[in-house]
Amino acid sequence: MRLQAAAFLLLCFTVAGRAEPVRYEDCGSKVGIIKEVNVSPCTTQPCELVKGQAYSVNVTFTSSTQSTNSTASVHGILFGVPVPFPIPEPDGCKCGISCPIQKNKIYSYLNKLPVKSEYPDVRVVVKWELKDDKNENLFCWEIPVQIKG
Image 1 (cartoon, rainbow, N blue to C red):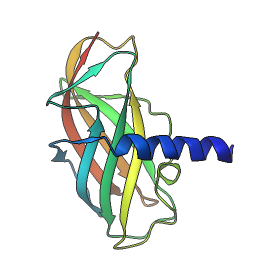
Image 2 (cartoon, one colour; image 1 turned 135 degrees about the horizontal axis):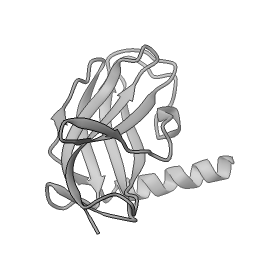
Image 3 (cartoon, one colour; image 1 turned 135 degrees about the vertical axis):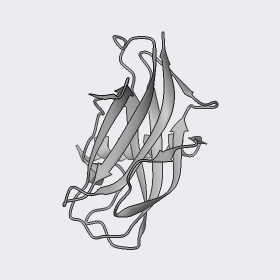
Image 4 (cartoon, rainbow, N blue to C red; image 1 turned 180 degrees about the horizontal axis):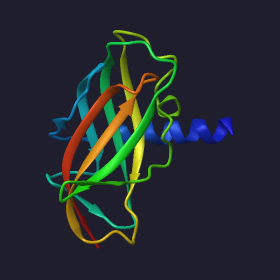
């Protein structure tokens, strides 16, 4: 199990090194400050997400609070309605963040966004949140994407 976690983190760090910074909108980072959001591959905006592919996400942020844990959630906002996008690992402490989270420390959160084959061809806004142990947003960002076959 530890070997799998180490291999996953190594893969994330390798891919994160090739990630592209994207323009994002902060949607309510209450107890953290986003420094940079990278999605790979995403060379233009809106990002074109191909069905059946997985995209690497790297968020560099500073925490302004302490927290024993963190939990991520991702939604696609379609016509104002949030639709859950499942991610492989919602536990932020298993995604490059060393927990407990310390105040005024910089973190690099790493995860994947799988685009399922059954998703329709549609333009949506991806909303990605990471919450602390008090359910406050360490970060919240949104980017427009185009899902295509």
